[in-house]
Length: 441
Ligand code: SF4
Ligand code: SF4
Image 1 (spheres, protein in one colour):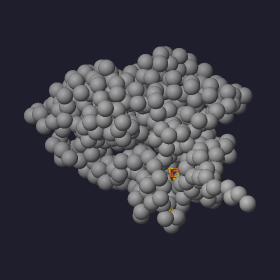
Image 2 (tube, rainbow, N blue to C red):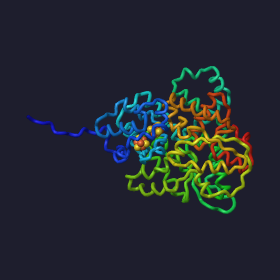
Image 3 (cartoon, rainbow, N blue to C red):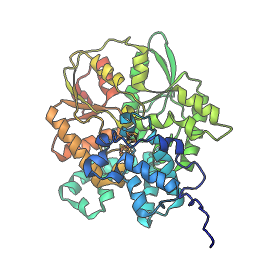
C-alpha cells in the first residue's frame, strides 16, 4: 500500500512581505485586546477582533485558509486603529501584520468594479494635494451659494450611494486658504530648525491648522522650513494596502526633506505622523533608501512632542473653556503620544480639560474607513458624540484632521454646534490672546 507524503499546503500569501510569522506567533490568545477593538465592541464576533484576525492570518500563512471574499471582509472592517497594540501585554505589533495583510489582499484578490472605482477616486484625489486644490473652488461655490444647505435640507443626498453620502456629510466648511511660507524665522533666539510636513487634506482643507502650527513653533523659537517640493507622504495608501504607490511617495518625501537640512520633522496630522515614523520599515529592502528612511523616521515628531521637548517660552493668555480632548488613534496608539497634548492644553490658564469616556476606542474616522465603511463609521461616530455631549464642553480638541471631520459630522447629527478644533489652534489662540469665537468658521 502506498502512503501519501505529508505535503504542507501552500500559503495563501505571496512571497513579498507576508505578515511576519514571528509576530503572529507572539499572540497568546489572551483576549486583553478585545474590549478596545471597535468592531468587537460593536458586533462581539471573534473573527472581527484582533485575536480572530491574527488567527485568520495564521490560517492563510499555513495554507489552511484562502483569501476568499469572506476572509477579506474581516480585514476590510478593521479600522487599523491600533488600539489592540496599546492593549496587548505580549507586544504583538498588529500594525505591521495588518499592513502586510492588506498589501497581500490588494495584490492577490479582485475588488468589485464599484469598489475599484471608489478606491481609485479616493486615492487619486485625497493623496494628491494638487487635485484637492482643484476641488476647492467648486466646493467653495457649492457651500457659499447655499446649494449645499438646499440639497441637504431637501434630503436630495439620499439618492446617492451611501459611500458618496458619507463623503458629502464629511465635507469641511471651507475658508480662504492660508499659505505657509517656505521659510519662517524663529521669533527671538532660534532654538531649533524644523521641517513641517504639510499633509494633503491638512494643506488644502485645514490650511489654518498649518498656519497656526507655524506661528506656535516660531513663537517657541523654531525656524520652520516647509519644502515646496513635498507631496503626499503616502499615509492613506499604506494604511489601505497600496504598498507600491506608498513606497514611491515615501521616497519623494525623504528627498524633499533631506534638502531642507532640518533637525526635526514636525507632523500635525496623526495619520501622516504615524506613517512617516514607519518609513524605515516601509523602505527596509531598498538599498538606496533603507538607511535614509531610518534617519528620516527618527527625526519625525508630532507637534505636541516637539513643543513638550522645547518647554514653554511664550506667555499663554487665559482661555476660560471646558475642553473635551479626543485622542486620535494614530496619535495615542500608533505613536504612543497621550501626555504631551494634554500637557499643552493644561498649560493654558483658565482651561479645564475633560476626559472623554472610552478614549481608547476609535471615533470611526480611521483614514478612509468612514468613506468605505460608512455604516460602521457612523455607529462609532454617534457613540463618541454621545460621550462628548454628556460632558457638555465648549469645544472638542483633537490632533488629526480626519477626527475633526468625523466628530463634526457626528455632533451635527445630534444637532450640536460644539466646535471641533486641532490642539494647535487652541494653543495659537492662547498665544495670540484670541477668543474661541474668533476661531469659529
Ligand atoms: S486595529 Fe482596531 S479595529 Fe483593527 S483589530 Fe486592532 S483594535 Fe480592532
Ligand atoms: S492582547 Fe495581544 S496576545 Fe492577547 S489576544 Fe490580543 S493580540 Fe493576542
